[in-house]
Length: 233
Image 1 (spheres, rainbow, N blue to C red):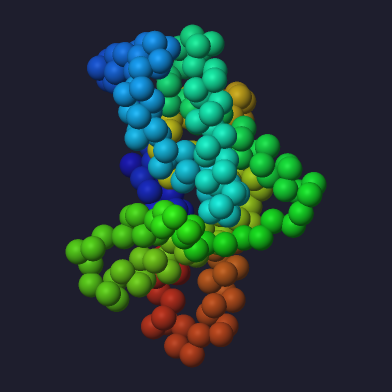
Image 2: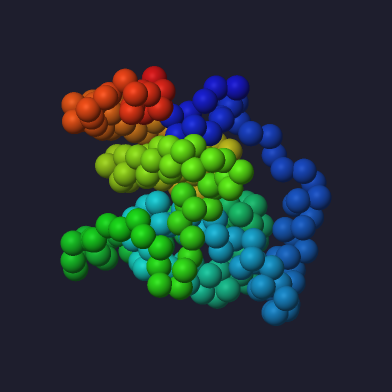
């Protein structure tokens, strides 16, 4: 198993399909949704709300905009569930709607105003990605370094091509298979692999540049930036 720049493992071969029982669960949930069972909607939101938010947030870089987009995603899911025929997995279908909604929001804001980028949590107290993955068992020094690493990566992700960023996020953070990403992004498998490779290389270059800039200003580069040098190797 190789390791991506972001720090998550990935395999060169496509990830194996999910177990049959997972597909059965999707089928049961889909049937319940089409029957307008309230509990099914609760299950759907519980299962997908945070992953959808994480995906959209990394593409829009604004907590408030991400929350608005997430609401639109689930409205579209609820409105269109009757027409979903199960030709892809439920997860892939929801992610495709989320990706399209993120693109729609970005196009709208690019036309109407300059997008203000923020990493703070929203007023409702939704936890950021960094807060969600922090390991409470680590000591404060390790925790600080972990947050610095992920802050650096989040900043770097903003600077790469949006199509490359989406592919990298779906693969290395959301851990979708190449086939699932192809379905979500509505592109060929070859295009998916190309975007992931080019996205990882773009991300590496941004991180190298940031590491060099930080090294130039650090009073003790070797002592303070060792972890950053490990990321960009």
